[in-house]
Length: 234
Image (cartoon, rainbow, N blue to C red; front, side, top):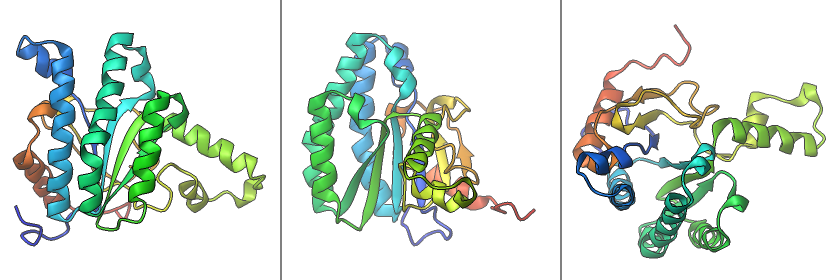
């Protein structure tokens, strides 16, 4: 699908990455293999979304609740995230993709924090697309941190507006999400972009994330374009 084939393309797509472990179980391979296949798929979808003209792509990679998983699995995931940045950030930079992080950076391994900061700094002036990774992120946690930030600025209650809140979120300065995709068939947000998704459309394909390819993204976008978005107008 080419970007000029359809009208009303979503500006901002959010993807809740889900199904890596079930993908692995279905194939009787270790869970960690599912995570490896899953993170390899991220690059493919990012580059295809850019080809389609998507302005912002946000992926939900690791939630604040995912710390409850086993230490071995968490360590493996963190290592995968580091390798992903090492392997892909230069190509993203060359293609004009700006990299951003959502969530609590300081709770991640120090080595991963450093790589994220370097990636953000390297790509901060790129304008062709924004790729955001929600890593140690939770929607309630983001709103809590936003309230704390506003309080620290000593802003009076009567001065707090929707716009002010948006300006202090992790996604400050960006468009709200238009379309949220959650792979694997699960039909819940799990705290993803709670504030920003007030008028988002939702799409829940049954395919597990490692198998979510370009054709699957096409189907999601075409379904979005078929819907009538009233945005609260009735």
